Length: 131
Image 1 (tube, rainbow, N blue to C red):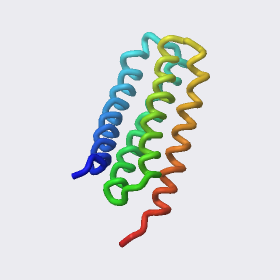
Image 2 (image 1 turned 90 degrees about the vertical axis):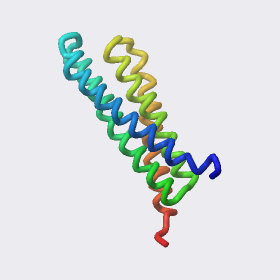
Image 3 (image 1 turned 90 degrees about the horizontal axis):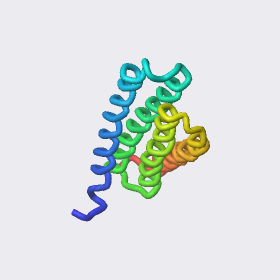
Image 4 (image 1 turned 45 degrees about the vertical axis):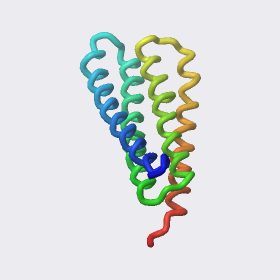
């Protein structure tokens, strides 16, 4: 087994872990922060948690695609989803609890990573042929 044979498993584990963390983040926002943050900050937190969960699932799907049909574009998609969760959702979580406004300026970098991820995933499926 080569080191690349574990790539889908690693992304699957990361995606599943990110999914669990997204559920925790969502519950924490809904229950732990509701008495400490205003409605605008809670909405920011909720957006971070929603995108976090959606892209955790996308990462698991990408890991499955990598198992079925390994490709560079699928790996780009996977890394882009990971980066997007960290930068997009992470900056929103921090913005919600700290009100440090410049964090909002880096959020689009994470959004761009998500867009790259979806494009790369589309490209990976385009090249995936049934045998």
